[in-house]
Amino acid sequence: MDIQRYPTLDSLAAAAGELFVELANDAMTERGVFHVALSGGSTPRAIHLWMAQHAYDLNWSKVQLWFGDERCVPPDHEDSNYKMARDTLLDALDIPPHNIHPMRGEFTPTQAAEVYESDLRGAFPDDLPRFDLVFLGLGEDGHTASLFPHTDALLENERWVVANHVPQLGVWRITLTAPVLNQARVVAFLVTGEKKAEALNTVLNGEYHPDDTPAQMIHPTAGREVWLVDEQAAQKLSDES
Image (tube, rainbow, N blue to C red; front, side, top):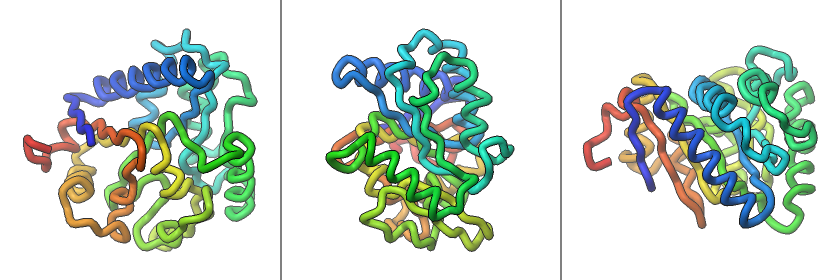
């Protein structure tokens, strides 16, 4: 596990953007394509804005953009992860439309999950999808993607994408499952702000209780796990963490 600390959101966003570019170039050289799963939230917004300014000359025709989770809202809704990515990154770059794979939040939750899994199986026909990079966030309750505490998605071992009812929020979400996330070559957690400090310390240093803290489930089986955190989020970590 690689824990990297940054003094500000801007410096973290630049580091995450540089990681994206480095891994993209490596994947294009080795395999001819870069598969990445994006995350929603305020921290990814800052990363997208950095990439729109500094990574516009990347060979985006060889980048396949996926999403780790989505809210059950239309693509033009303010809560849509896809809309955030479109507004901050996708519209600013020359990306072929067929390289962008949004989850269909306007569908019923079950249908949206089934369609997305079908899309993934078309792109990865031989085995579990192996993303070159997955960006993940961390909630104050320890959730990541839309794997929330004490929800059914935490028990899923077969499906790649599921509709997950989140009773504590009274909503449905669509999410990649833990087996898919753990297949990634690199998982990069992005954690900022003092409100995340307790959850971050629990995930990294607490006892293993994934039903309470689902982010503890995510450890790539044959890849790298990177935590990019700002000083506010890291304030409860020891100097050795």
